[in-house]
Length: 284
Image 1 (cartoon, rainbow, N blue to C red):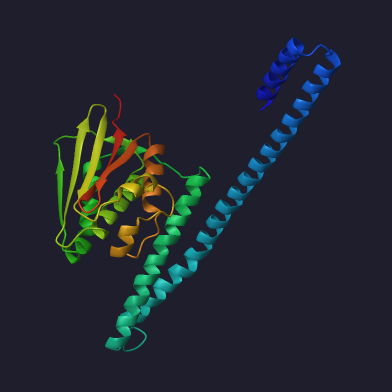
Image 2: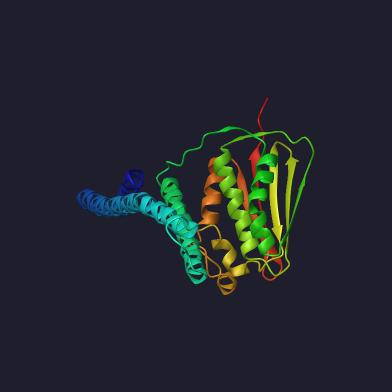
């Protein structure tokens, strides 16, 4: 703003000298313009400072609340597990059904709290990345093993194709695992009955290229520009699946970009979606 004010003052002075004979009037005009611009700059700076402070307070609030919710949620899950075990007395069949509902909802709440805490760290630029040599192929295989029960229950076929002898990457395995979990979770959650998911991993120049393709509900064209924004969920997916916070893709994008990679997608409503990301190979 300072540079703009100086240039505006000099330009006004030059134009004034050319068209106005009275130098006093020119000087007053320049001073008046500079004063107005200074006031505007002051108001803009103050507004940005207030926005920055409000954003900081919001991030801190989310962080504090998320931390505070973790302990009672953990205690709640522990209590439900203890009651369902029957160690405190016989449990009727009808009671077990309600305990399962409680357990499922407490787990969902725990996932939301974890996502909010991750978002808070991203916004405060405090997301830890402990980079180490990682075999992305092994990470994907281990992750798919954990998803098997849900894949089976959802009647979905998952196929993983990879090139042989792929080199390792330098990344934080826990964070990259979170990215792939979010992408696979979305693919299963928004897929059609008896759907198929294809996961590919290959080398492209100096990068590893990961791709996950599904034949699910797809993303409407008008919604695609918002897909990586916080809390955004397409209207069509809400008809198929009411659960979801709209934070998974925002978190995935932030992690991949902080890891030095790129992320993107292709999609057509009713036909399915393909999400991909790249990560740099280790330089030798």
